[in-house]
Length: 227
Image (cartoon, rainbow, N blue to C red; front, top):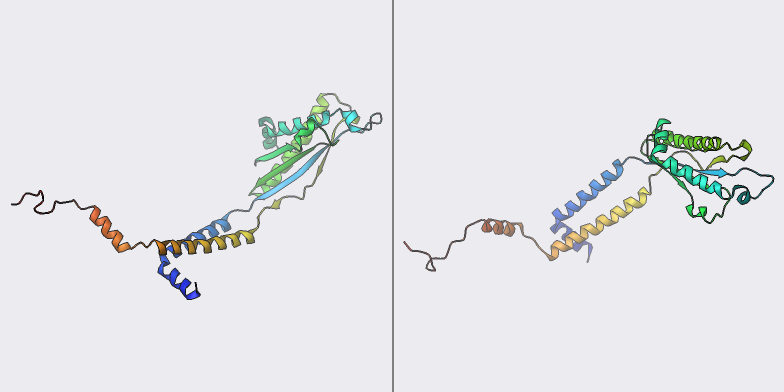
């Protein structure tokens, strides 16, 4: 099909082509008006105490440090933990999750790690909620060890790593726009070819609708009374 034939095809079905273009423009506007999402995340490492008698962390901790990290993560994620985070200034949803939970049964590392992540469209709220979550994790870890009367030398220490601060999450706008452009072209040709193969004449459609609304009268001489 030549360029002239393509132009003629699109011109014959201008209304359908225009509808596809309007839908594409609306999608672009909706894409551009979507607020930016920010993410603040980090990894909290639960470091076991250093034992001179048992330098191997698996022997000194007996695997309990992995369970302790899981308990703290579940508590902060729960309703009581959410109340503490809210009291500390957090206002957004968050996730606190023990990385590789199966290590409770089959530990393959000495210092379990807990992943913390906060997402939202308000960068200030993201920062405050992240700080509140980290603070609650630290406070709970310390408070539980004090309640268990663990000596300071035997206490778990926390190390926060991998926190670059709140980062925008725009995705790939170029790829999204390129994909939308491709879909628009496919949609234009699809509807044009469809109506080319299935022509709809508005005048005939209007006649059929008007005819459908009229009452049916019997033809003269076939059952109709003649006066």
